[in-house]
Image 1 (cartoon, rainbow, N blue to C red):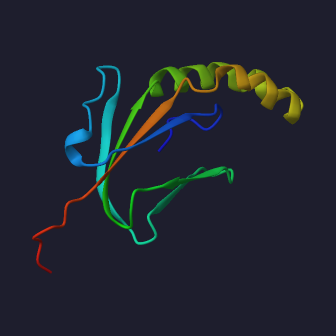
Image 2: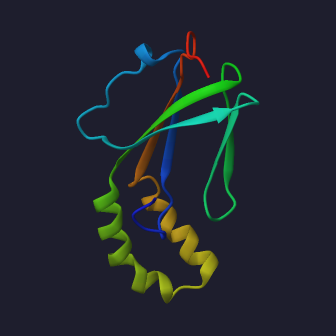
Length: 122
């Protein structure tokens, strides 16, 4: 999903009490995905390809909608391309520390809302 894999991204997780409490994104956020997921344990785990993860506690077990939005993807992609040659020439540990200064150029926002299943027949 990320536009590049060199710079660390920042992820903001917002858990809403209901669909009506979700505030539309500021103009600089771009909505890109909307989907529904079951959460039988009332928890979501969000992680990356490098093994970093967080666990998000939800108000209760159930069905949730998730709106994924982003900003800074183009800027991060351009920055990563401009840095990749210099990064490749550095020892790995030094290069990873050097890249930290650009953490968060690419950001994602996950808005999670419970889905009202009252009155829905199966």
